[in-house]
Amino acid sequence: MGKVIVKQIVILTVLVILILVLGISYYHFFEGLSIVDAFFFTTITISTVGYNLPDNLSTIGKIVTSIMIFSGISVVLYGVTTITAIIVEGKLRDFLKRRKIEKMIEKLKDHVIVVGAGKTGEYVIGELINEREKFVIIDNDEERINKVLNIYKDTTIPFVLGDATEEETLINAGVKKAKALITTLPEDSVNVFVVLSARTLNSDLTIISKVTDTSSIQKLKYAGATTVVAADQIAGTRMARLTTRPHAVNFLDIVAFGNESYRIEELEVVRESYIVDKTIGELNLAKNFNIMVLGINREGSILFAPTGDSIIRANDKLIILGSQESIEQFREFAKL
Image (cartoon, rainbow, N blue to C red; front, top):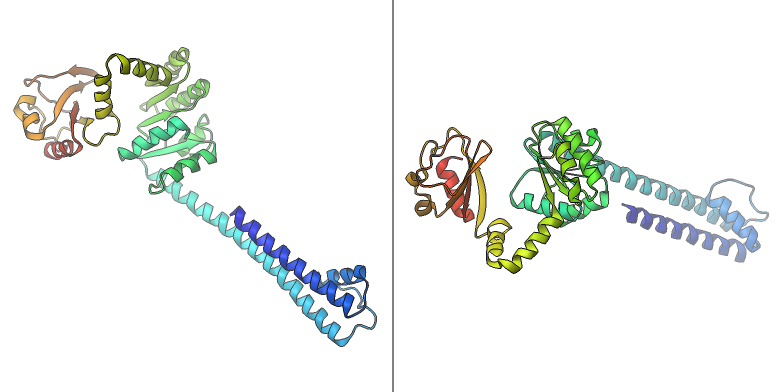
């Protein structure tokens, strides 16, 4: 909108200068006024101030003066109405866009709130989009938010422009109805405030926080963080293991990070599911669906590498490995 206003101001300025030049030239060369008098009379004419006419002004001069009065009024009206329309339309467009986003957020439930649209936040947002997860971004920097919106132009992303340490901002992002919050801010102290505020507003919220200094991990957990991720520690460990066990690390990359051939998924078993009270061996998942059960999360305890005799119960969370297509087929079969 700013560029459009500047363009209109330039056009308006050019028109005013053109009328001034034409007026000064006419009054000086054809009516015999000095340059200063011609400039003065042209100015008061196009501004319609209305001083007395110069002595011996010719009939043609009066006609030219009348035309200049109408020209001056027209240019001023054009400039005022055009710029006003641009500002009003721009504000109206921004208001309607903001209202649309607010209504989207109001309808959200069991969504994820991502605090911070910086580098780490961009990766989080990209993964949530790939997983088709509902989420809201919070950031106090409009430029960072616009950058993310431009990266994912084809996706409508709801966002809240504000300080995530303030409860009102979190409420506007739907924290009371959200299922998780991920804070990716670079300052550990700010992440602590965000976690504390979010935990106060929603005691059931899953909160994942980034940490820069590992000494802040305990503070974040005291504040209410469910999981704390030390990015530097993870990166350092991964780089070291790439030298000691590269094939194992690369395999985990394939199944965990963005490869469409294989994925690790967590599926919750609802009571109505077809597989409740059946054993893994009875389902013969490897043969029928080409998927593997890596573990079962049951009431917070993980059963790794379950055997064929392991019984699947309601509310279990199955951690499975397979292709996206195979997982979807199993999900549909099991009614998950």
